[in-house]
Image (cartoon, rainbow, N blue to C red; front, side):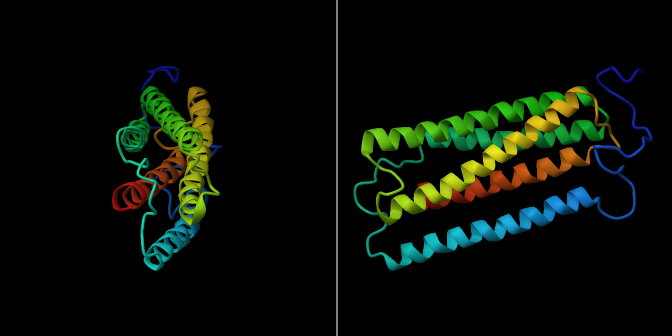
Length: 210
């Protein structure tokens, strides 16, 4: 089977931009770096959640009156479903390239990218709707500041993840990954899963528990 076909057999390659081959001793430095970065981001968001719950506990009425327009359904719920699905599609892409299926990798990454863009578009529309229809912005009291800080930082992380997915998708189209060499895909996938988990926590905290 030729290298240009959709599925390739696992084979030994020289180390390249995709990272070290699987089966080597220890953890690849690129993947380790991503894990350490994610650990630092966990602490960052833990701090933001800590501020939110501290303010919530110290405020007699929470959430403040007049913000009943912030509802989990239908739009935000749709965005949440899309982001959760994107976590599944990027994991599917990982499973495919582990089997040497480059075509499956490309398809999984492309669908993940589209779902992530759709989620970010919904969030931007929600911001626009809140500001124009309800004059609810980042300067709308403590609650407004917390709402836009938490969701805004997460949106920035989603954007960063989309940039990373775009890069590895372009590399996948150039057939730079194989069953043995795809550490970059694994690293970006781990980051995207992290972004997904953070949003689930935010969705429950802000939209469900309030």
